Amino acid sequence: MSEEIKEVNQVNQVNEIKERPRSEPTPPAPEGMTKSAWKRELKRRRWEEQREEYTEMRKQKRKKLKQERKKNKQEQGIEGEKRPPKIPVDKKKSPMSVIVDCAFDDLMKEGERTSLASQIVRCYSDNRRLPVGVNLRVTSFNKLLKERFDVSMRGQHSGWKDITLEEDDYEVPENEKGSYVYLSSDSDNVIETLDESKTYIIGGIVDKGRYKNLCKDKAEKQGIATGRLPIDQFIKLSGRRVLTTNHVFEILLRWLEVKDWKQAFETVLPPRKLIELAKGTDNEPPREELSNEEQTESANNQSAESEHEPESKPEQTS
Image (cartoon, rainbow, N blue to C red; front, side, top):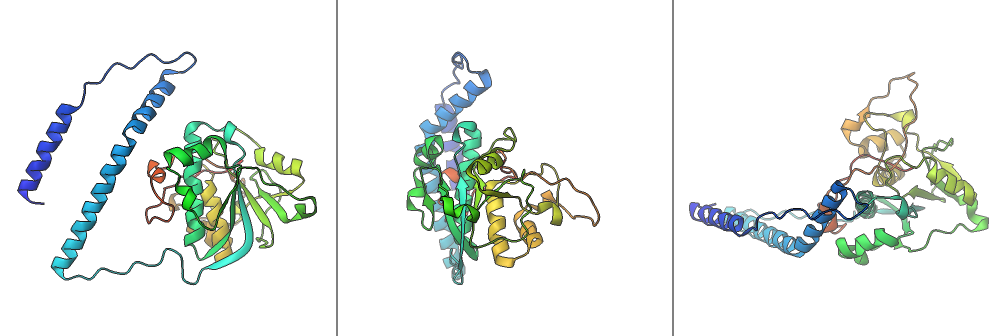
């Protein structure tokens, strides 16, 4: 960057600071709302007011960087490398179905719902980019979760392919109950292998462990089987022993690809979460639950087919 451009940028930054209004005193919180919750709400409102301006600024910045990279390559005589296809050429489609059950909207806080939305985006992306895909359904896609996708995430889901988004809860036909398995850490049934003729259900809730046996109880009321991943048989987790919805989903896809649980776990889970499992160690089974650690807000403005995917922090389902 030339000295002239640097000087112009510095002047612009100074002018921007001068034009910023002085911070106004925070209005009193509404009755029944804590000060911290009120501050978060005000911050959210300010963000919504500036969202379009911020999005346009980022768009122009990316466009400028792209032009600069192209110019530099032309000056250096470098031909741009061809990007690999977003969908693998040899991609396989498993007959197995996976449902993300989002019927717990009323049990989540705003930040937890934000986290779940990002996890759903990641599930969609993984199902398209990994070597093996499944029939993916998101059920009870309604209420505030759907509102987040429609408004904050600008309806990006309207262009999604190879996925079914259903406003109603899933239904289990009486004569097909044996083909459904609800994944729950509270289940006594350890899944040794996946049956590709079955439908596996992942509880779409981020609850910080507040609701015990939630998914297991729902499955038992519906008369369907439950099962848990054999995590403790192959690896040991450090820190909070929980996984995100998208981690559980990706583990299923990885197993379909390699038919090896240990390899699937080690491929999906962050290295910092793994501890080599010593032989003969009696480990308490980790909870396979959703966490409520918020993922990056960039998931709101990105397409699930983008190269830059939303980050997900370790957490899991009830």
